[in-house]
Image (cartoon, rainbow, N blue to C red):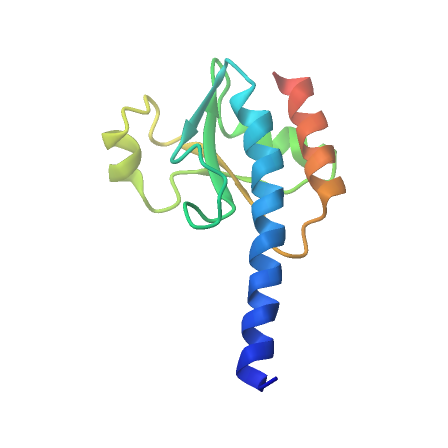
Length: 123
């Protein structure tokens, strides 16, 4: 085993884990009729990164991080320097933008469960 081979194996393990996180979160989002997911609905690592942008019908995107912060969960909202893209996607309030959730190898399955349970309170 070369160092290069071990590093590749490590990245493969991380990628597989992030794919599992993505599947769990996407399954949750796609089960909600009042959610508009921006981007691919496929959770496979070859199709997307574990970062998700979405809208909740009849809710301001800026409200969601504020609520989740009370649950000790960090997510973002805004246009993320992509205002023209937000407008091109026909998102009515480009200043409010979208809700964005990002995951990484240090995100646990319990973190995703806490996030989905907290989001369920909003839906």
